[in-house]
Structure formats: C-alpha cells, structure tokens
Amino acid sequence: MTIAVDEFIRRFLLHTLPPGFQRIRHFGFLANCHRKGKLALCRQFLAASVTDLLPSPEVCREWLKPPATAESLAVCRQCGKGVMQRIQILPVYPWPLHPPDTA
Image 1 (cartoon, one colour):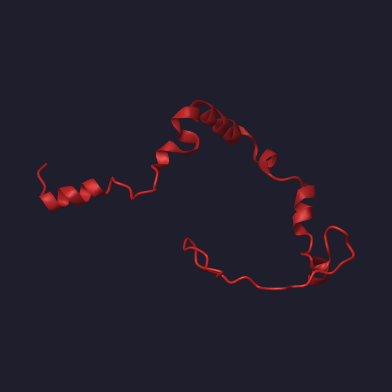
Image 2 (cartoon, one colour):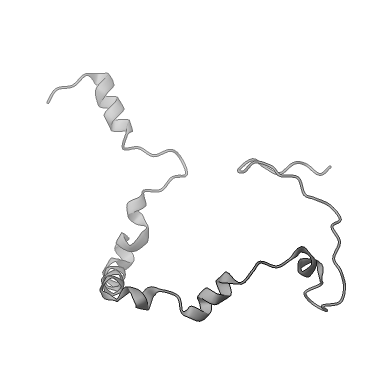
C-alpha cells in the first residue's frame, strides 16, 4: 500500500504517547510480571456464583443507615463533648495547577 507522506506521519503519530503517559498494556491483570496468576484469579472470580461476590446483608444495612446530621458531625469525635466550629473555608483551585501562594 502506498500512502502520502502526510498520511504516513499522521498514522505513525497515532501510536506515540505524550510525555508522562504509559502504555496500558504494561498495567493491570495483563501485565507480564503477574499475568499467569492474575488471569487465574479472574477465571476463579468469573466461575464463582454472583451471590458469593455480593456484600452481606449486614453490610447493606450499614450502607442504608441515614446519613449523619449536622449536629452529630459537629461533636468532637475524640471526647464526644466538645463542639467543633468552622474557622475558615479553604478556596478551591483547579487541579493540576499549583495551589495559590499563601504569601
């Protein structure tokens, strides 16, 4: 197949990554260093019944408890007596920029 130089460069650059990025194939359960063990574990999980993978009823009940109220969040977690007060609200800054200077 013959293609123009511009098209060749475009297709070639589709395979390059920006600085700081890593190819996905080197991570996860398909990584070379642990592939055999991880694939065996994946096959084991896939063979297990769904009910074995679900959380227990006790855990589900814990998740369904109503959220803490503002009053209970204000009580000190250490002594249970003192009341915490808001002193300052930290400003939000966009990530990955550096935080604002405090000077």
